[in-house]
Length: 190
Image (cartoon, rainbow, N blue to C red; front, side, top):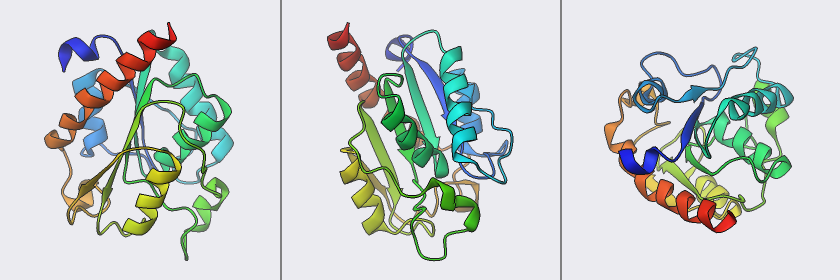
């Protein structure tokens, strides 16, 4: 992974309430030397503010950028891609939140409707078959909308600390194929 990763910068896009120090995103941030999106308020998410936070993180990058998003962060990336199709090289979208589900917390409602356009960059959705915040049928539909390959994790909950995903070393294995696809697309665009 090191030689491929040398071609890219990484951005960590947390979800609602951020990703604490034990979350796999925080571990990956340190391991990959990633830029972390900073938002004014992780508790009361604001779509425009979150898009600005992602944009500011992308402006810090020196090379083509891979965004590693979790939960509401995945939805943020999809909204951002619709407005700025050429800014992201690739994205790993882990446990996307279904902001259109019944009984969705009101804080997440401004992120609906979910973008339904194909993402203009290589991506991969990683979903759990028992995620309480996105039914498997919805995760499959999102992957279809975004034309993103889908990796299923069995009984992995929301793929967060509460479901036992702190370091999540095996998740890092998903990066090399994604980075290779991004490298091919980047070289074709050059």
